[in-house]
Image 1 (spheres, helix red, strand yellow):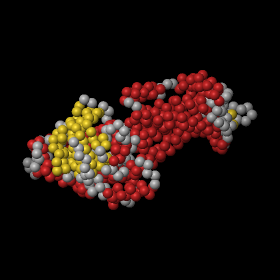
Image 2 (image 1 turned 180 degrees about the vertical axis):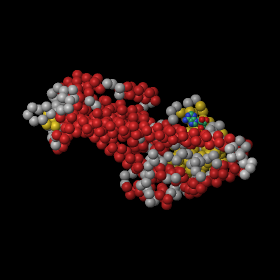
Image 3 (image 1 turned 135 degrees about the vertical axis):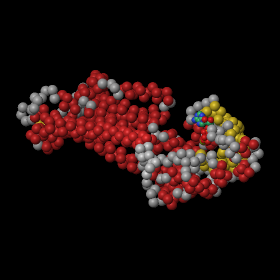
Amino acid sequence: MPNPTNHIELVTRDFSFYYGDFRALTSISMDVERNRVTAFIGPSGCGKSTFLRSLNRMNDIIPGTRVEGKVLLGGVDIYGKDVDVVDLRRKVGMVFQKSNPFPKSIFDNVAYGLRIHGERNPSAVAQRVEESLRAAALWNEVKDRLDKSALDLSGGQQQRLCIARALAVKPEIVLMDEPASALDPLATQKIEELIFELKKEYTIIIVTHNMQQAARVSDATAFFYLGELVEFDETKKIFTNPKEKKTEDYITGRFG
Amino acid sequence: MEGVNVDNPQSAGIGRVRAWRRFREKAIETFFLANGLFAVLVLLAIFSMLFTEGWPALKRVPFGEWVMSTEWDPTSPVRESYGILALIVSTLMVSIGALILAVPLGIACAAYIADVAPARVREIVKPVIEILAGIPSVVVGFFGLVVLGPLLAKAFHAGNGLNGVNGSILLAVMALPTIMSVSEDAIVSVPQELKNASLALGATRWQTLMRVTLPAALSGIVASVMLGMGRAIGETMTVLMACGNAPAMPHSFLDPVRTMTATIAIELGETVQGSTHFHSLFVIAFFLFLMTFAVNLVSDIILQRVRKRMGGA
Ligand SMILES: Nc1ncnc2c1ncn2[C@@H]1O[C@H](COP(=O)(O)OP(=O)(O)OP(=O)(O)O)[C@@H](O)[C@H]1O
Ligand SMILES: [Mg+2]
C-alpha cells in the first residue's frame, strides 16, 4: 500500500477506466515522483491518453465514462465526492497533442488562466505572463508582438505558447500528450530542452511514441499494453534491461 | 535526333488531360464569377430602378424636407408634405426594439442548445425553432392584432395596444428563429479543442462559454443578428397590422407608429400612377434600401475588425 513519502507527487491504486462497457484501463497502480519526468509509452490504443486525461479528470466531459480505484494527489482522492474539479485542473495542467491556442492575442492566451482564476491586477498579470513565456522559452521570440494573434505563430511556437499558458496558473503537475508529435526535429528539440528545464519546478508526465524521446527526456518510464501497466521503472532500466519480455519487444521495435 | 519519339502517345495523353483539367478549372472559375456578377447586377438594377422612379418626386420636393420634416401628408388638399423622418424613426425604433428583445434571448437559447442541453433536447428543439421561422407574417400580425394588442392595452393603458412595442415584440418573435439557429450553428462549430484548453486550465463551463466559445463564434453570431435585423427592417405585413399606423413622430414605444414598409404597402394602391405621391413612395423605398445597405456595410466592417483581432480565418 502507498507509503506517502515526500517525493511522491501522485499515486494511483487499482485504477480502471471504462468508456461505457469498454474497459480501457485495467487496475493501474503507479507512484509518480515529484520534479521528475515520467514518460508513458506503448502501442497505439493502449490507453496512454486515457490514463493521462484521468489524472486531471478531463475524461469527465466524455459522456458514459466511469472509473474504479483511486488517484491520490497530495493524499486526496481526486475522484472523491467533494473534490473541486476546477481546483484540480489548476493544479494539474495539460498540454495537448494538437496545439490549441485561443483565437486571441499571445498575451491574452497566457493571461487567460490567471484571469479566470480571478487575478485582476494588470501588472501582476503582465508579470506572470512574462515569467511563463520565459519559462516556456518563447519570450524572446514574441516579446515585441504580445498583442498579435496567437494563430500567426508557427506550429512549434504555438505549442510552446500552450505550455506557457499551462504554466501561468502555477500547476504542480504538467501533463503532456505527445506535445511534439506534430513538430519538426528542431522544434521538437526545443520542446525537449524545455521539458528538461521545467522539471526543476514541475512534475511532468509525458506521452510519447518516440522511444528516443522517452529515453532522452524522462527519468521514469511506464510501458502500457492493452490497457494494462506492464512495466514501470527508471528509464535507464527500462531501456537497457527491462524485466518484461513485452517491454523489450516493444522498445526494440519488434512489435507495435 | 532520330530515335526520339516526340509524339509519344503517352505524353500526348497527359497533355490532353492537363488541358482538359485547365479548361475545367477555368470553367468553374468563370461560373462562380458570373454568379457573383449577376448578383451585383440585380442589386444595381434594383437600385437604379428605385432611383429613377423616385427621381420625379426628389426633383419636386427639396431634399431638406424629405429627411428633416416629420410631416408626411402627400394627399393634403392644402399643402402636400413629404417628410419621412417620422417613418424612418419609426422603422428604426421598431427594429431596434425587436433586436433588444431578440438578440440576448436568441444567443442565450443558442448557447443553451449548443453547449448545455443534452443531445436529445437539441434534436427536438432545433427543428421546432426552425419551423417557427416559417410562420407567415400575416399570422404573426394577426396574433399581434387580436392577442398582444388587447394585452398591452390593458397592461399599459395604451389605447388599443397597436403600437411600437407590439411591433417590436412580434418582430422579435420573427427574428428569433433566425438568430437562434444561425448562432447555434456557429457555436456548435467551435472546435472542442478550444473548449478543452479552457477546461484544462480550470475554467468552469460557464467561463469557457463566455470567454472562449462565444468569442470564437462571434462572426457567426453577428451574421445571425444581421440576418435578423434585415428581416425586422424589411418586414411589412406584421408591422402594418400591429403598430397602429399613425404617420407621426413617435415619442415613446407606446405610441402608434407607421414604418416605411407599412407606408409603402398602405399607400401604393391608392395613388395615381405617375403622381408625385406615387414617386415619393419609391423615394421611401430608396431610403430603406440605403438603410439596409448601411447596416450590412457596418456589420461587415465590424466583422472584419473582429477577425483581424482574433487572427486566422
Ligand atoms: N472517447 C472515447 N470513447 C470510446 N472509446 C475511446 C474513447 N477514447 C479512446 N477510446 C478507446 O480507448 C482505448 C485507449 O485509447 P487512448 O486514446 O487512450 O489510446 P492511446 O494509447 O493514447 O493511443 P495513441 O497512441 O494512438 O494516442 C482505445 O481502444 C480507444 O479506442
Ligand atoms: Mg493518445
